[in-house]
Length: 162
Image (cartoon, rainbow, N blue to C red; front, side):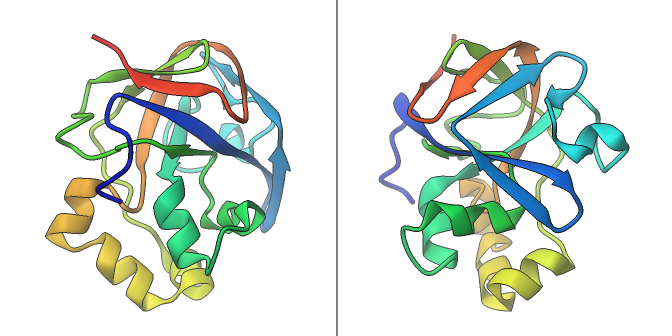
């Protein structure tokens, strides 16, 4: 996880949650100012705000899912999976970063996981993610809001702004 790129990485997977317990892995997704990820049920009154998306580290998703099968990563419930350093040191709250042509801003609320996450990946995965070091590295991922809307595609570059 510590070897994830700090300046320039890539978007490895896009997942949309159209209904409870349903995950759809897509090659492209539309990030919108009002709705976050178009087609994701978060816009139907789930937790957070409608313009928010969740971003997870692809390396941790691969580790806890038991391998490199990106389709299994979608079970985390996150939308964007990046090979990029999501740590607080690299992306503090308020920092902006680009995913392809979209611009996202890191929001301050922590992304800690839930009972469904524990059932899918085990208590050890959440315990590690919620250690002091795990929280600093944002192993569980982070929340971000859409600043500049765009269509993002698997393989798009990810980089810090400013």
